[in-house]
Amino acid sequence: MHVYLVWGAMTMYNKYFVLPADGSEVKEWADEYAMAGFPGCISSGDATHIGMLRCHHRLKQHHKSFKLNMPTRTYNMHVTHRRRILHSTPGHPGRWNDQSLQRFDSYCSLLYEGDRFQDLVFELNQLSSDGSMKTVRYCGAWEMRWSTTATCPDALQQMDRVLQKDVECTFGILKVRFRVLKTEIPLHGVDVCDRIWLTCCALHNFLLEEDGLDERWNASRYLFEEGTHDEEDRRRYLGGPAALHDTSGVGVGTDVQRSDCLGTVFEGGGGGQNADEDELVYVQKLDLTYFKSKLVGHFDICWKQHKIRWPSRTGSDPPPTIYEH
Image (tube, rainbow, N blue to C red; front, side, top):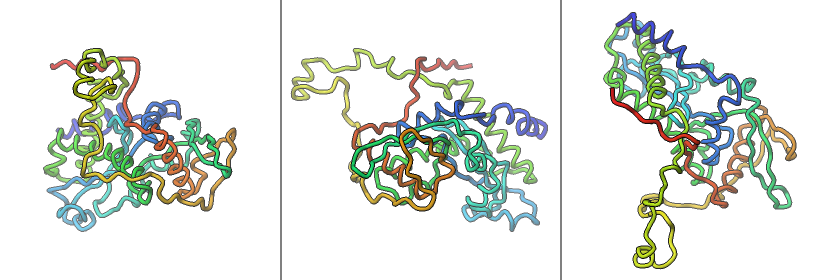
């Protein structure tokens, strides 16, 4: 087993974890987040704790977690909307918080420096001083985390929280598929824990590729005539002209309070730029508060124009057929 873990954490991990070379390779992922009103976003990230049942006594205090009542290893992970893991840190003591993890995360450094994804160009709708709408082009990539829209309007926060659950769902998939991650690791040494984690992540991406779940598919192919209402049913039960498809049960439930997306928009702070429509603005050179205000303004405009929709994997190919072996 130990030989397999070494192979999985090195050979298999390096095969199924290749960071994108430029912005063209992440454009498909960015398009999915743009549907939800977050242009330029390519992934969501968070950290998780994995328990260790046999931690060395000299390392026990250093690995004592504030989430679990036992020593843990913590891993910072970044995933796309399709649940594909882009990167994971090798493992750090459970006492570390998210800010400490990001300092030692090569993927976070890659996004912060911004040299690799400068050819990823996206547009944000903004209101000019005279009230007219203009489109400003930005270049670069950014990642969604819990603190990105923590103090933004309600509608934006709701969509952000739903998309942020991509990484949380991936944690759940890993811990259900590989029970050793949920029932704590019973082997000695932090190196073995890291190998188990990296091997499980590599197997997760391997299964996504084998099942074809990381590729695009065309949902419109399966909207055929049998899914529409009959003309007589529309007149009898829906009272006149109605939608072609059954929309019953679709929408926000009674436990969710809907609110206008206007809210309070941040004022641009240091690092702000008054860019023209033909000028490219580099995201990594902007102040966080300033960029957040532009993101809130863009989401508000798209929300009022009813352009915000749930990201879907649209393409020209149908969903792949999964055969049971």
